[in-house]
Length: 116
Image (cartoon, rainbow, N blue to C red):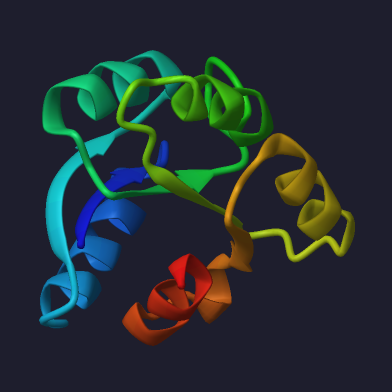
């Protein structure tokens, strides 16, 4: 699966890229640090999955998810946050995301399970 990582923390993006690139199931095709860059990268790179942080400098993952879903080749969106708030599960579902995963639970296996 081709994956785009969207998070405003460059260090986190790098660590997640290293983790996912160890898995034969994922190819990390790009990274973005905010919503506008995420939309541009999704259009250019055509990922299968977007791993999307809930809190971005210019928008929220909840607002960005429906915009990604409206694209012609809509990726599967998995929302993530360092906050494990239970309400995020419901908000992620309402936004159209495939799943919500707290950052401390992220792994290749958890993402693979979340996208089905």
